[in-house]
Length: 280
Image 1 (cartoon, rainbow, N blue to C red):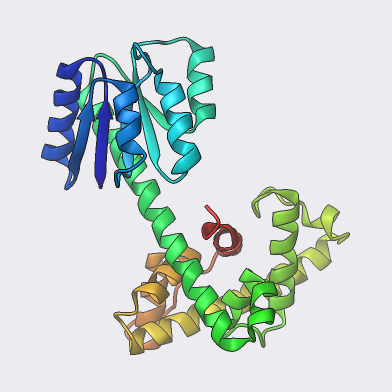
Image 2 (cartoon, one colour; image 1 turned 180 degrees about the vertical axis):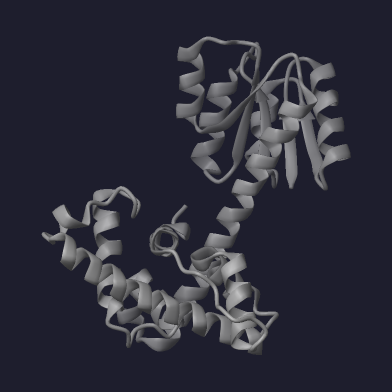
């Protein structure tokens, strides 16, 4: 990861630089104790994570975050501050920061925060890669006009060889409801949104479960044949979980008595996320 540090206290900058470069496989590509000068550099430099002081003499940390986010919305920001004012901190989060690091600098806190932000960045990159893979598959399967209108979830199910399963229609309907209601699967009330009784709900869940199990089996078999297919591996791990994919592969090879377990919530939440990954 490429870091940039902005703080009017040079000792703080050097402490943070040492923590980043000694404890992570990362590089601090720039530091500046003047926020206006830092802003100019950040707009043109290739930086992934910025640590910025909240209170700067010329341009505040919050304003710097806002300005950079307008041009580079994917840049991640971590705010450094000794200020405990809740209103000011709320404004910083609204501007687009990920976390606060408190002053005086604490090694454990810094390492914990950086690990969380790096993990978030890696996950976003994986989801973007998966989304692009599905888009490419969709473009190969349909005409350009159809491709632009194709549903992301439908293309993913097609890629996993699930479209012949009865539960596929249910999956697509539930994902559509999740998106329109802005809810994950756990928080979606199927009985209310689909007008179901408890028996009908259980029938639909069972159909979805069978379809998802087919998708897991298909993904596992393809990974057995193509173990270095990183994009398929990322997709399968995102929707089913690494342990379940691995267990299913062993089961398909006769090395295990049972296959991987599937979770409706994990699969549907992951499927819904794929539709937005490429837009961030």
